[in-house]
Amino acid sequence: QSVLTQPPSASGTPGQRVTISCSGSSSNIGINYVYWYQQLPGTAPKLLIYRNNQRPSGVPDRFSGSKSGTSASLAISGLRSEDEADYYCAAWDASLSGGVFGGGTKLTVL
Amino acid sequence: EVQLLESGGGLVQPGGSLRLSCAASGFTFSSYAMSWVRQAPGKGLEWVSAISGSGDSTYYADSVKGRFTISRDNSKNTLYLQMNSLRDEDTAVYYCAKVGDVAVVTTYFDYWGQGTLVTVSS
Image 1: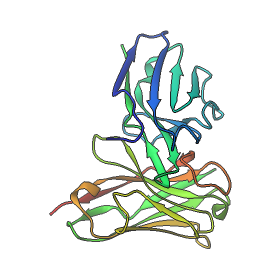
Image 2: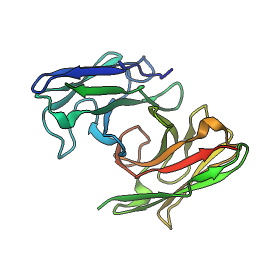
Image 3: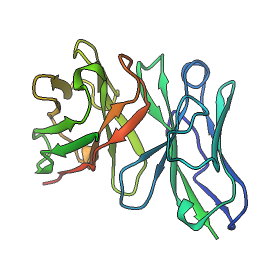
Image 4: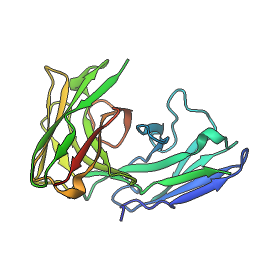
């Protein structure tokens, strides 16, 4: 059972907009930044969103992040086949004095 | 170019020990905290441990506390994870990851290694 809760799966057709939620608590998302990672099959995770809503250089603006209270969301617009991957949210947890990840969401592009 | 290269994985019996290394290059190693993150076969990511840039502060997941020790040698630009009393459930790919901000310990990982597989089995 992960500290951060994500839906196990999501799907959409090419061109659609999909959102992935990440629910936490007052000790993690409520007081710390949220980060999002994309993991393509057989590869290491890649930073997608940092500090709730910032995109590293090279990440398309189709990807956006938001945070409200103890929850966060990743939105992907203009869905493309290459977006098919696992997506993870992460945050630092003050109570645990450690990092926590969501269980991951497998995105399928239909 | 930032590079992180893990090594030291392999097959070990339950109760055994293993030391992972992560050789870093392309950045001022001592300025950045580092972490280990693992992924069991077919499962999600699990944060394991973190260490500050100076090495003075360390942090552990409850699942490994008392069994794993994170350390770093800033003169060699290398991160370590000493794993003792290994269990079946420690079987995973272990990634080292660089924190993206200077002088803080967070889950902001801007660079990851390719991972090294640790298999605990008799």
